[in-house]
Image 1 (cartoon, rainbow, N blue to C red):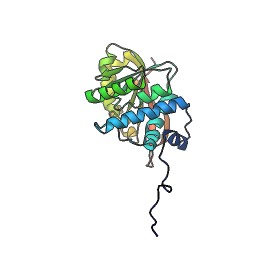
Image 2: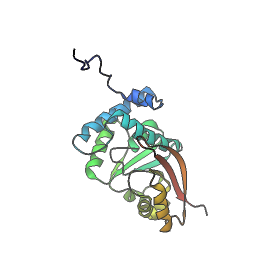
Image 3: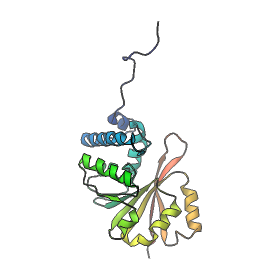
Image 4: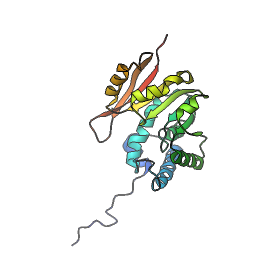
Length: 223
């Protein structure tokens, strides 16, 4: 007799709600629905352009939603935030869905990705400006409370990029993996923390590894 599984033996397809429940994340039904629609739009585009490596609900929730919730917990009500190098829209689009009180702006220097994210935002009906270019161009004439940075560049490079623009934002919120300690040392050796202070706000397990992710806050030292 064949032991091949029948359709009745196959596990049910995964869902956004099920993935969120596995990670103990409770969200209103309307937010779950918008997150699900965002994923489907992103994954459709991903077949044409390399927008994300997180192409199933488990990876999306375990990495993108979990990381965005850390940004959310560190963000005050009605802040103006800039997602630096949004890529496929994380954390900015996800944060705008979870925190409609925030004024979220996205920046993306790769033109094709910026156009895709703009299309996704429009289809979701979200009022999120998308800047087609580098974040520094926006900071030359706009002000934000927080800059959100995830998987963009090492700390020394980030600090050099934004050194001329500290009058245009209050703090950097940066998610990093285990290399952050080495990057902090390199930045200190280069004198990049002379007028800045760094605080680790949170740490949580990095899925599939024995390491952890951290949320760092960097802001000017008080005079």
